Length: 133
Image 1 (cartoon, rainbow, N blue to C red):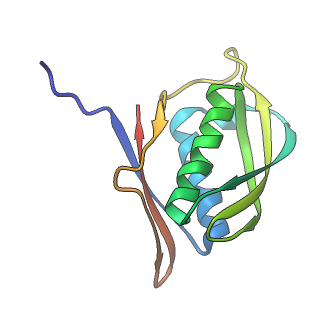
Image 2: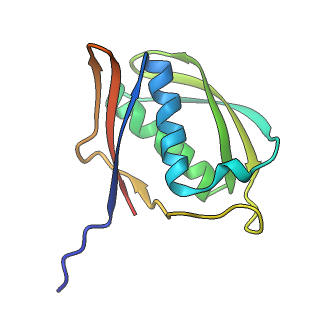
């Protein structure tokens, strides 16, 4: 048996919760795909809920990962319209995945709860997230 760790971890910060959740979406997609190559996109609104901030972060990223892996949407922009400790609403700008235009950098299989934190620090907010790859 070979022991192999197949995880990526990121630490993301933001000046407030809105900034943190937006930055975390961009950080995850930066691991997955070269979104800079996508052209002008379409927009739609989503809402995500959780029982606390870490659960909300988990559900937010899981939903965005589903939009990419399940619906082949390349997320270009994630604008948090409103956010509380257990719910957020966002406007998503995306383009359809095109293998001829978009380069996949890493395949993220899942967002995990392992070491998941969302903390209010003296200089803003910070989260740590581990992805299963």
